[in-house]
Image 1 (cartoon, rainbow, N blue to C red):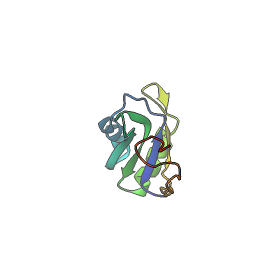
Image 2 (image 1 turned 90 degrees about the horizontal axis):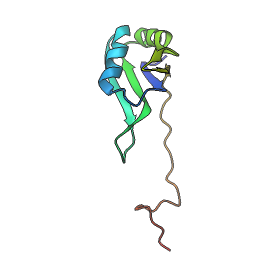
Image 3 (image 1 turned 90 degrees about the vertical axis):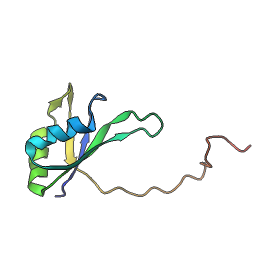
Image 4 (image 1 turned 180 degrees about the vertical axis):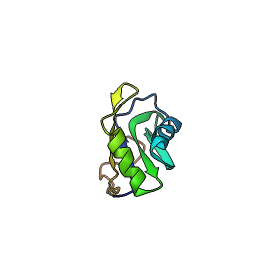
Length: 99
């Protein structure tokens, strides 16, 4: 098991700091980051937490998965490696068609 966790189904009111403090109940949090919309800066309702040991990560999964937090049941599991995406053929930048 890895030390990086995916945390989903979060309230949009949760901050990086809130997430870090919550997971600190299970051990040392190396980092906690919500994923944000690049245009608006608004949180997308999920993020990643990195615990200092695999044991702490396992404890956090067991303790927080499906636990109600800020009115929503969190999804907590081991983060999967990011898969690189190929650029789309129809994206030329700027959002406008050349035609």
